[in-house]
Amino acid sequence: MIERHGLIKFQGKEVSIQGKDLQIGDVAPEFLATNQDWEEIAILKNTAEKVCIIAAVPSLDTEVCDRETRRFNEEASQLSTDIIIIVISTDLPFAQKRWCGAAGIDQVMVVSDHKNVEFGEKYACLLREPRILRRAVFVIDRAGIIRFVQYLPELGMEPDYKAVLTAAKEAL
Image 1: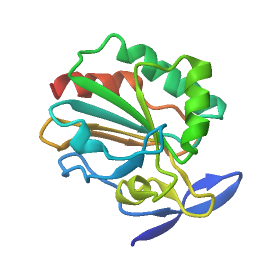
Image 2 (image 1 turned 30 degrees about the vertical axis):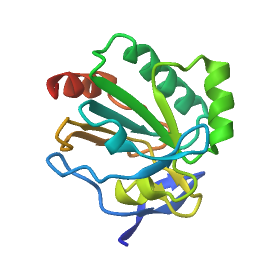
Image 3 (image 1 turned 135 degrees about the horizontal axis):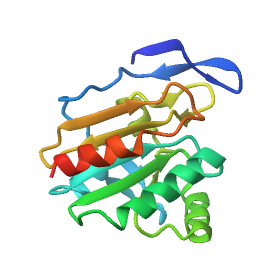
């Protein structure tokens, strides 16, 4: 496993990123994640035939992740049913379920990478030392090809929502 150091900080300290950044045109790797009922699911297999937006966030309990997930939830209600938005973090599934219920999140799929950090490793989002995901967004077309990638250079930054949504619509 490739490990890179010095690209991003967590609480003021440099941390290591596991994996190699994915690029537009790459085949999106399949990964298992845990839903809020603690069932492991193959995400891409279960979203086949749809354009998939995957937003990796460090923790739903932080201000920026809260705002980003709420924004994607609002945007999802205005998108084609052929586009699905998935938010993934290493938060425990019962914490995600509690947060989603309190926040009224009902348009996006929120899943956990806590158990195996398979997404984090395959998508180069795992920050090894704190064992959380770095903020990133991917758009995957119906054929499983990555059509948009944005790795945020700082955990406190939000993605370019307009560019993400435009890429998803163009991938239909």
